Length: 459
Image (cartoon, rainbow, N blue to C red; front, side, top):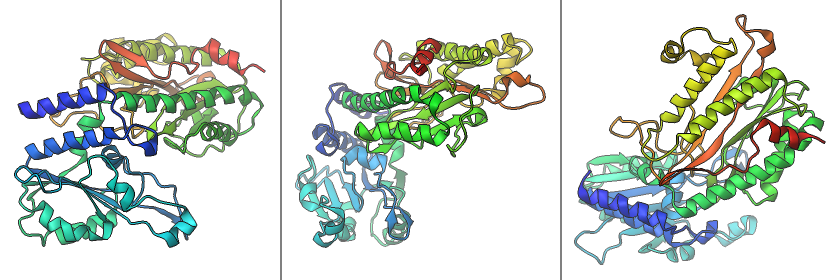
């Protein structure tokens, strides 16, 4: 990393720590997007690169019916624009300050279409975005591109998962004289920025978490009187909607009994039976930022002895893992701690046999705990960053990062397991902000102990 790049990253952290926000369209201050673009532009300048980012496409569900629109996260991160038919072009001009560095191509307003859809933003609104040098009609993109990207060594690009644009662009790109030779995915650069959350981003996460927490607490007392997983799902998602969340962070996972042992169960149509547990993995989205919270509760309102034993073990593992979160540890540390606690506990319960160190080395715990403990959280519920940095080393936690901590134990029917443990899945998940001196559990308001959960579920 060059000194200039290091300085830019330091500036980014300072900007984010000071809490500069986003656009009014998502109820955040307008200048945060412009600041992000300015910092990103300086990195591009150092790389002798230009950047093109395309908005997400509209997906058709079936004839004349479209899925609810959701912007590509990288595109939103740099623009705050939550509408399709848009392209962001950044062309750092190191020698001619009169040229545009930030060009925004958007679909003009269409009065006839707006009779059906209502008003949509267009060129006029795009021109008002801070830090945008020129706003141009989307269909004129190829008239400008050859002139603007000529001479750069590198093109940084995101197609926004728009396969139509990707193919069209690749076909026309080859015909541009003196086009950049090196092509790089925009996400490979942006992920280092997106990993560190600003104060405004944290506030959006907190709001998403608050909505999720309140909706969960609303539904817990109802569960003993409900009959099916989808009834629970409906109550929770109604809670999200009435509190202003415009979409889910991800499809709700509501698994009862045997279904609690499937890690990403999808159906949500099983029956609720007394004596079983119900696993709820849910998250509202607010200003494009997603909560991700899991709680497991007894359908009857009271945990059985076996459920209590497994629940307390998972909670012990989670508590130990959360306690370790601080700047300087690897992103893998939470999993190593949780795996050790769970392995020891499974031995004590008779579900594993052998030497603790050997079992951990062999990862014997994966029979019951087969997923990782943490992932990044932000604009995407499984946010950018990955398990390792670009140099192949594990990420080191820094202040401003947000992770989940979610150990679990899942026991399916098996010949080598006593039937009293069968069809029991327990996962507990919280959202944790890394702070300069340690951590803060953003979802601390969500009831978690057995005493708290049972008290809420009583009539």
